Structures are given as structure tokens and as C-alpha cells.
Length: 58
Length: 395
Image (cartoon, rainbow over all chains, first blue to last red; front, side, top):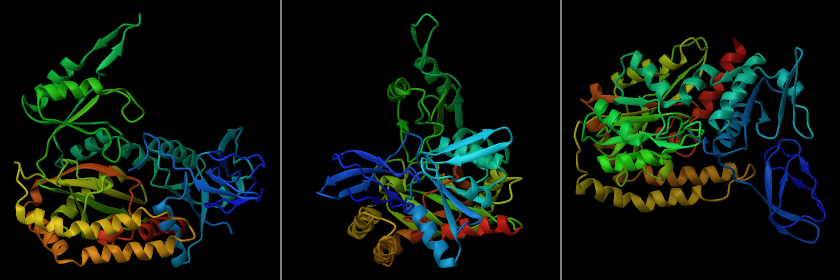
């Protein structure tokens, strides 16, 4: 599976071959979590996981 | 390339991308320090900071100022403490974060400086408690009585979590029945660890104000002359986060002076800080919003909806500059309209002569700014943050 590029820090994120749609993968460099939105033959489509805790925000 | 200025955040949000874009335009290099899946090790006089794959210790060593943009208030406090222990200057400093974390602590600082605040009562007791043998006791009735004893019987009461954000869990209890109902619903939580915070309802007509005050090292604190007026016609909460319309309005000098006093009460003894203060004009009675005003709001609705549409688009680091251009264009269309000007003038006119009735109620140490405050007021808070950071690096 082709690695994906972290949208925040630009690091290469390895994607396991048996990755499933809906799985969460983390950037090993900055820890950003990405959700696998789609799995193609050799690549995946990912989207930043939106997290918001109770104490988040101004 | 390592930089003396770093930005610490959980993930790059709009504001953080705005800071990066501004830094790029100003030729300032900033380093990213992630703040969730990362360890901070402190042992035997040494420290290490790292993620699964990367060591941030060296990078951090070369950093002298950190913009603390962690969105979790608790995380901002913990990491602010860790970074200051490492000798880093943090924006905002831990002292400022600590005060702003709590609405009550903030209000007490204002009150000590004789700033007008909404009458505030704190009852250090939870509505429900457990006895040692596991029974639940209910205190809501007694808490309601204490609130009424303090604020007056039969008056509307605003209940707020002490460290809440974005208007979450703020309730307006118009009568005894709803006060009891809301009190029964309050559970101790990360944003309200103990007790009940209640305030008198301020009749602020249809808007409140967000005022920016900043201090760079070696300079006096400065209050920007424009503020953001956040409106709300349907809800007593005038919060831009709830999707309400915003306007840029000129502030009378007296309110700016009060704002500086408020901000200094929080930032005193700190070298640099940036604060967004929330204030209301206390009109003293409920003033109906006349048909003329609602008609102007109706005219603005489609223009404001265009801004919201752009905001809802997917934004990444790659398309941020382009997206921002679209956002600015949409806001410009909205702000150049006749209806916008009319409402702006109504707000400005209503503030004049009411300078002594301004009530300050909150201070935000990590405000959202890119999508609302910046566009409505023209205040580039990203630039201000970077100026503050640079003042700390240089001096």
C-alpha cells in the first residue's frame, strides 16, 4: 500500500496492506490521527479525524 | 530549519494554519510541536520529548518561545507548565492560562480592580453528592435558595460551567422551576469540577463585544480600537461559534481603558500576552429588537450564509491560501452591504453614552480569530501573536 503524507507535518505514514475502511492510522512523527475513508488497490483515501474534547475551545 | 518560535497544537486548525500563513508572509520561520501523542520525560535533571518516530528534544532546545495553541484548556495548562519548566517563554504564559481557565478566577481578578462584572455567585457544593455508604444526596433545593438569597428571588439566573467553552451548557433559568431543573442536571466534570457558578442576567440588547488587548515585551499593553460585536436574536448567548452574525465596531476610549485594566489584572508581571475579552453593555432592562433591525438582519442572511458556505468547505494546508481568499471575498461582500453598515451604526450608536455600563465577564487566552475577529475588526491576531513572540525572542 502506498504511504500517505501527513497533512500537518508532511511525514510519510506507512499503511498496512490489510488496512480497512474506517480504520484510524496515526502519524508516527506528530501523532495526527487520520481516518481511512476509502481503500483502493494500492492506495487509500484518508481524512483528518476531527476530535473535540469537552474542554476544547475558547 | 529550527526556529526560535514554535507553535504547539493538537492538530493544525484554521487559526494555526492562519498563523503559519502569516509567519510565511512575514518571513518568520515557526516549528510545529505536536501535543497529543507525544511524551515529555523529566528525569534526573534531563528531559526528552518524543513521538513514536521522532525526537523533539533537540528542536525544543533551540526554541525559546512557544505559541500554546492546544485547544484543550487542561492540555494548555499542563503543557504550559512543562514548557515553562524547560525555561521556554510561552504565549500565553502559564499565569494567564491559569486565570483564564476559570471564569470565576477571571471575574475575581476583574472585581479586585473594580471593573464592572455581572453579579456572580459561586456555591462550592455539587447538586448531587455521594455519602460514604453509597447513598446519593440531593442539594439542588438548598443551592437554588442560596442563589436566590444572593442574587434576588424571582430574578432570571444564568448558570455556567466554570471552564466551559463555546457557550456549552450555559443555561438561562427564567424561574424557580427551571433553576431547580438545571441545577439537577449539573454534574461535576472536567469543565466544572466542583460547585455551581451563577450570574445575574445582563440585558445586553442583541449583542456583546469581543475586545482584543495585547502586550509585547518592553511595550505598554494596547487595546485595539475596533471590537467584534457578536449578535444573537434567538438566544441569549451572543456567541459567534453558534453561527451568529458578527460586526466590526469602534470602541469608545473609556471602554478601551477598562479593557486594558482587565487584561493587566490577568497578565500583570508577565512580559507578553494576547487576550480576547468578552464584554456586554448593561442596558438595565430588556429592550425589544425592533422590526427595523430584524429587517436588516434578514437582508444580511444570504450574505452571511455565503460566508458559512465557504467555512464549511474542506480546508487543508495546501488549499488554505486559496480558501482564505474566498473567505475574505465572501466576508467583504457581507461587510460592504448597506444592511451591515446600518446594524454596525446602530450598535456603535447604542454604545456611545453607555461607557459606564460596560460589564466584562470573560477572558480568552487562546481565542479563535481567523474566521471572525480578523475579518470583522481587521485585527490580525496571528501577526500580533508573532510580534509578541518576537519581542520575547529579541529581548
